[in-house]
Length: 330
Image 1 (cartoon, rainbow, N blue to C red):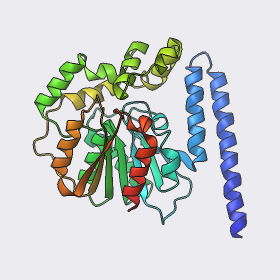
Image 2 (tube, rainbow, N blue to C red):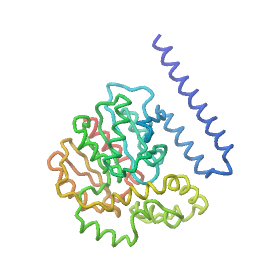
Image 3 (cartoon, rainbow, N blue to C red):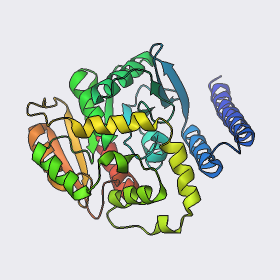
Image 4 (cartoon, rainbow, N blue to C red):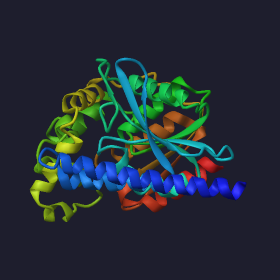
């Protein structure tokens, strides 16, 4: 009986994958003149990879204004810890966690939301704060029956994860924050913005290939020539799919994040917290990592990845995965 059940699970997985391939191919064919075909094809392949990691997409209507999209386990294994993975600005969860979803889904029950206005998550509400993002995400997790979980978040996602850990302290077991400058002074922010020479929303939500190349080079430890070889029409396709969708709302999120004053009384998290930073981060310089660790105190520790920039999930995925697995599992 048990072997029959396992066989049926395998058959169901392959049938759902085959149906997803057919549905996505049909959608691409019908919309070939209206959508960024090559980038959309890559997005479809990434979706199939997530399915092969035993995850399924799930859209949850929180109310008549807000829908949040998750990738969730097909079969929750109760002996495994639950891990919520929160992405940043560099695309949706599919693209950001390409190098994490395989290793981490083998160790944890992973829940991967698209933050509001990224991927398939959307809200008609006018709220743009990280607290609202956190509330919607936790509401979704509660609908899924997830009562206890750890969080791993990168960049903008780290601001959201901090709010989750602060506001739902009893639900959050451990926190992993990667490359997220949560503790800063107004003077540090203004000085850093002056160095950038442009408003962060213009970089975080690129409009053209030049902007996108700047975003990539800021995120990497060394300037990369990869994007110099990619035709501009492909970069425009990527921008159309990732950034033109809800562009106005994405810009408003960035403006809210940059425009708010530093919090002098930022609460100290009660959970054990692991901070991971690239030593060559040009978005949130390494001194912000040390400031955040000092603020969190003895229940936190800082791991610095050598020769790594802001996008640690892309430049040092193996080291990052190893640190996350060791910390959350123990």
